[in-house]
Image 1 (cartoon, rainbow, N blue to C red):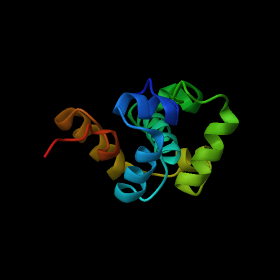
Image 2 (image 1 turned 90 degrees about the vertical axis):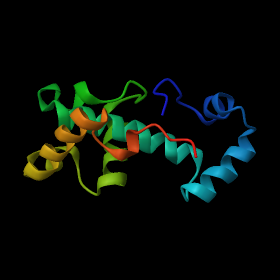
Image 3 (image 1 turned 120 degrees about the vertical axis):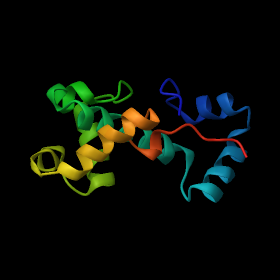
Image 4 (image 1 turned 30 degrees about the horizontal axis):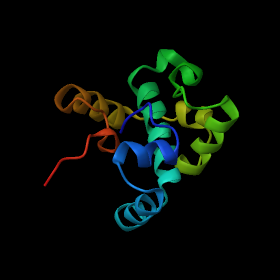
Length: 119
């Protein structure tokens, strides 16, 4: 969840876990590696930023951990199956309304950016 964490080693350090333990936990609970989890979170932060304020355009909404626009476009294709331009051109009236309402009510526009709760 921490937008300052950009590598698996930083994630393991923040979680106070050895990297191999973090790998097992991510595989068990998410079904993918910590690296992919970090990529997904970086992408989700960018997508949500754009959805909440399209005036930023994609370049202004990109998470600061992207090295360049090409890296963002590759992640966009991987997670969305389309290009950022095609996605932006498609109508999303319900999704936009839901994200704005959830942002106001919950403090985050999508569940993927919610802080985990303790049981």
